[in-house]
Structure formats: structure tokens, C-alpha cells
Image (tube, rainbow, N blue to C red; front, side):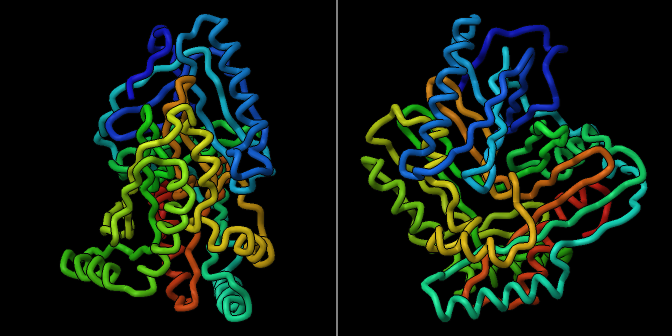
Length: 386
């Protein structure tokens, strides 16, 4: 996908709105129009009110001289909460920034850190979910934690982003300013949906194992994950749900029978690359992403019952965690990642998020360990051990 708005002097491009895809990075410049309309009800329509607001913003951008305006930003987990989407005056795709050679920047001194819920509380929530599965038709629920860090001075978000870029050469790096003066920062390994013309790709991840320092142990961890009936079952719930949503919209849809195993710097994941051709190429990347969201990879299955269980047992609001982050242009092309491996920076405070998929065969201690491993991506960028 090659899309460009009128170029300005590259020194005017903002680093505070960023999304990377493969070997390229999307930057914006000039005044930005912010769209906060929620996706709202009507999952089948993919958020009608939001898309009307986006279309109007694109029309204004065209009248201002843009040939193909673009939208970049984030959508929260809860469809009724406000979106945070921007239509900039101009934008550009550039080659992904090279490693600086500097590693492990030292951030301000850490004053305090705590997790909500704590280890005992999270394990209790896992046990509660497993008991619930025996008395309901919920087959999977994704439970998460917040890990809050407080420093002795304001964090340097530029350095945090540089650390993420240096330590993680794969994945979708993102940085989105929020209306409350916070910033959403992270690097997601999971592609919810990419659209180019009439072709789409989705690459869900579900089922994880922590990477090991010893290469032989690391290889065995990957093998165990690939053989795990529990993780294969958890993954299958996700891929079958995506198949059910996308198949009616496609003339062809390829869903591999079994997942492959992929790696990030911290984890092994079960991964399935789903590709298809749309019946209606006029559907936009944003519309399709809103129709898919939330998948069982971040919510559970069946979706609405799993969502109710999450509301009951999670003692915090997720906000943008497990929502969507990405872009869509006025031609309907775009790319949306699942907002995981992320945190929100507000001055001297960083709130990190991580979750784990719970099924009947889950073990509370193992799920806690998985959550800690997932926190490791952002903690490493802070120069802190998981």
C-alpha cells in the first residue's frame, strides 16, 4: 500500500503520532482533527456513527487540498468509550528508523510499582472463571492486569519508544497522544486486519510460551506450545470466530488447519495467517476491523458472555488496552493491530497492561507467569526486569 499526502519539510513531522508496519513508519504533520466518536452498538455495521464522522473529516481534508487523507489512532476495548483518532494535515511513510546502537536507556528512578490485581487476586479470578465455565456456555475469557510504575520525574517518551524500536525489530510500534495528556505507547505483534484493495489479511495470536535464555530450552518451549492441546483449543476458538465473521464478507477465505509458531523477543505464539478476497471492496479497513473487534484473542468466547465475565472479575477499566491501533486512508486501505504489549504514560506514571486467555484447562499459576512474561516487553524498554 503506497499512499502519500502532500509532503512538507520532514523536520515538521511529528514523532508523537507514530505507527510502524514492516519496514516503514507512518508520521504526521500539521494541525490534526481529532475524532472521539465511539464505535458504539451495532457490531455488524462496524460502527456507523464513527464512520460517518470519519467520512466528514476526510471531506474537510480533501477540501483543504489533500488527495488521499488518512486516519491514525486508537479505539478502546469497550465500544461505548470514546475513540482517539486523528486526521492530520499531512503525512508520510518513511523507512523504519534504524537501530541507534544505544541500548537500555536508563529512565528516571523508580519510586513505586504495584499490580492490580496482585498475584493472589489474579489467580482467584482465574479460578472463578474456570468454575464459571462449568455452569455457563462461556468457553474462554481473557483476564488481564495493570502494572503501574511511578518514577521520580516525568518520563522521556522519546527514549521509551527508542528502546521499544531497538529491542523489538518485529511488530507494530505505535505512539498515540491521548486527550487527557497521556500517551499510548507499545509494540503489538498481532495484526487484526490489513486491507489493500479487495484483499484482506488477519493474523490472530492465541496461545503463548515464554522464551528461554538457553537455545535448547527455548526450542523445547516452542515444541511444547505447538503440541499443547490447551493452547491449540484456545487458538482454534479465535480462528473459527474470525472465519465465521469474515466468510460471509468474502468470495474466498483461506484459514490454515493448524497454527504455526512465531517468536517475539519475549514469547512464542501460536499464529494463523488468514487471507481473503472481499465481495465488496468498498468496505474500509476501519469498518472491517470494527466488525471483527473484539476477537476471542482479547475478550473470549462467546463474546458478549465473556465480556460480562470480564466486567465482573477485572477490578479496573481497560481503556485502550486490547482495543485497536492503526490507520485507514480515504480509499479504504489500512492496517489495524490489536493494542497489546502496551502502556499509557502520564507524566511520571506508566501503566502497563497484559492479559492471558483462560479456558477450562488453564492453571492459575501458569496464567500468572504468562502475564508476567507479556509485561516483560514494556518492562525491558524501561530497563527493568520483568
